[in-house]
Amino acid sequence: MAKRKKRSGDFEDLQAKGIGCLVSGLVFLFVPVLGGALRPLAWVLILLGVALIALTAIISPARKKQDETNTSIEPGQAGQAQSPIKKTRRSRETFGRIDTDLGHRTSSARVEPSFTNPDAVPLRATSWNLDVFGAIEWRRFEAVCEALFAQAGFRTESQSHGADGGVDIWLYSKHATGPAAIVQCKHWKNQAVGVKELREFFGVMASHKLTRGTYATTTTFTQDAQTFAKANGINTMDGPRLLKQIETRTPEQQKQLLDVAYEGEYWRPTCATCGIKLVERSSQSRSFWGCTNFPRCKTQIWRSLR
Image (tube, rainbow, N blue to C red; front, side):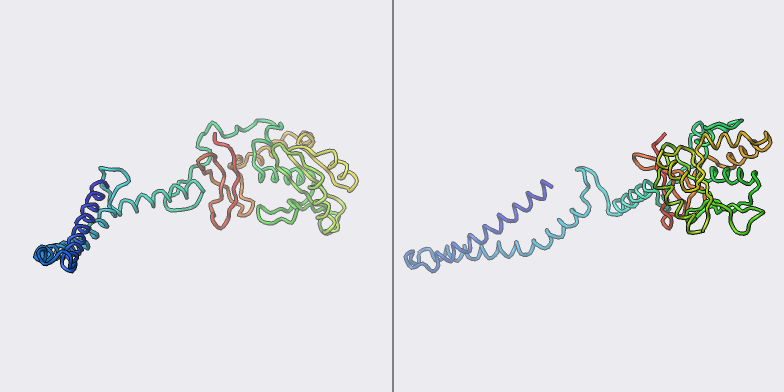
């Protein structure tokens, strides 16, 4: 960079000298006060000025082309040569890393196996307790609830994914035509189910002209939610109550329910839109579960890095 600046300064000085000689020669030639004594010198200065200006006009395009070439290959750090091809390759690699961080499915994206740390996979319990609900994902929780009602003698229908219209499980009785009741399952970790969720569920019951419904959750219900449910014929089942209901089953039935809970990759979330297991991906600060159908499906479940 310093050499290029020096060459630019020398070029401008040469051009200025040429203009100076030309102007001086014209002054000596046309100013009558000086007489004719300086006329030969005037012609010498004029010719020298024209020659210098012509010389700068000739070397200017060549110098400009050389500067452009140097600029195109100038590295970000002095003393290193780097071609434009290498710059392009580096940019593509950078974009690939960004796509990986965002969970995009690109040719350079890295899809990590689920739970790369085997010690982080929740262990299977040998008997029922509240920890089972925390170890399984939402789809396994719905499957446990459905199996529990099936053991009670109901014929059940459910769907694994997609819009459910506020109904996770339909219950049918042998002694009635059409559905006898509906069930909504909420697999939450810490948040209590509030009255808002119960009002929405009651609206779904009313739309199907049903007077019976069960709302099941792995956590608890707020007091307002309990009051609303009791006044509108909604059976509420929180984690402890579900556990008590399971304990009324025979040992064989309890084992069947436990097998349903721990079926397959019970700890890996299911995409509520596509019905397939999510995969583990990571950004610079967090890891998350993402759908393999991205970008068509943008389902993401964030969690902290282990």
